[in-house]
Image (tube, rainbow, N blue to C red; front, side, top):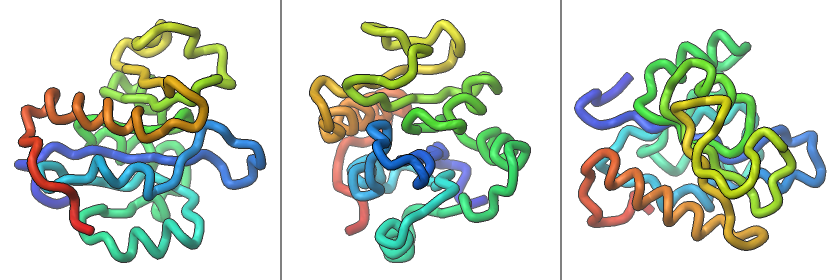
Length: 165
């Protein structure tokens, strides 16, 4: 699946497109500041809207495999290949957590899910989960910035250069 000398980071940026008032989701463009050449970036995003599909097509540094995911067994098999999964609150977060894989869950300011509790950066349900919450409503940029800093620290990655534009 690519260069295994680099850490594999799975990405999920939105939940189901059927939800009309989905505060847990962000756009692919919101996530792009994470994508740097020190890692191998894998999109685990199952549903992709037109703008994200066009953006993914222009980004050779993100491998999109979500279209190949038919069921949770496929998702679990792909999650198993990741070094960390960075995801908003979707089923992928729960699959990765249940598998004991490192999963970093990005949460909105007012989380709709009681399972993540309040004022915690860990999960009582999944010992390998880390929670990154918005500090203000709709502020994904600060969440992505914190995740970026933690990814760099976690993988001892260089903090130089941006992703491919």
